[in-house]
Length: 243
Image 1 (cartoon, one colour):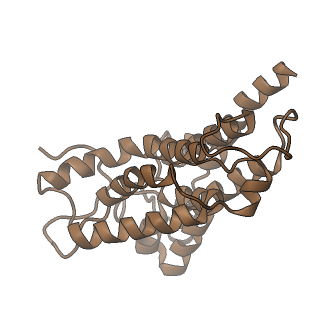
Image 2 (cartoon, helix red, strand yellow; image 1 turned 90 degrees about the vertical axis):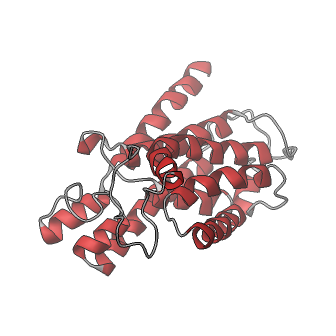
């Protein structure tokens, strides 16, 4: 039994990484325009750049498919039972230690976003993980997703920046998730309704996104990051710090 559990712990993240690596935005843009998203527009392999390059509906489709990578990867973990010793008769305490199902969930979340951001099919180039992360949050806890959107929206309004608020929003909702009182029924039924598990899921997302957003965040404080309404600065896929 222990060997099977170890196999799941290794196999599930690898499969999640491969699923996350599927570059839907790149493929759609290439199919309909013949252009390489890494070389046009914002140079980001994501739904927004697909909209800019290939049109709104094709970009919307790309974003939806990126969303589905996170959504269905997590759905598979929720539906499958990796730890047969778990009993649905026992309700998880708010800060219960994650069991094997929760550990696999956290790993799958991290690796599907990691695959999207560093696609094995694009020489480890990729997007910024927002769409895939949204698909994860909607399923793990829709209320957390709503709170994230509210915090993100407020930060965008206050700062006029787009990329840095994404990282700040994930960090700011962490303490909120520690005390969030509501979980969706599918999470409760499958024994994953724990504030600690939710917080670790969001932490894993934030850790994976960090390298993609730390450069723009530092540039924001230096006045060199793209700002809404400022035509002098452009939204380019450059994770480096502008000195």
